[in-house]
Image 1 (cartoon, rainbow, N blue to C red):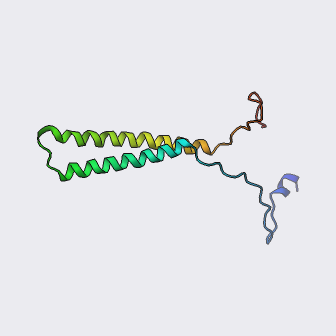
Image 2 (spheres, helix red, strand yellow; image 1 turned 90 degrees about the vertical axis):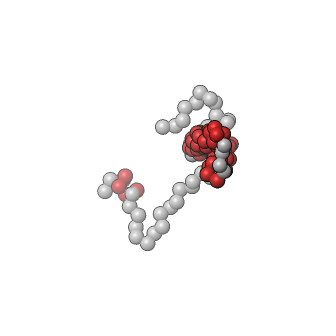
Image 3 (cartoon, rainbow, N blue to C red; image 1 turned 30 degrees about the vertical axis):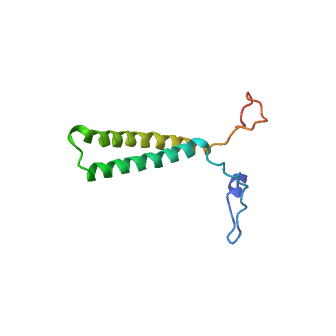
Length: 107
């Protein structure tokens, strides 16, 4: 058998040797701010929606909760994108601070 195929064979009853996994990086500030913004926008939008439903708004003042709901939905989407980008950025390996900036990563 070629050598490469022998590496892929694990005999039955033997646990494969687990490679050392680097510890996961903590989520950054962008993820935290995005998550807090999502929660805040959801609370503001929920309160505005309940107030729109339960209160009889005179004349044209009913537009105010509708505008608040619209802005809270837009804010929620922006914060969700920020949280997702922050979480995705934490999944990639960071450069070592001691390595020179112009050094290339090994292939």
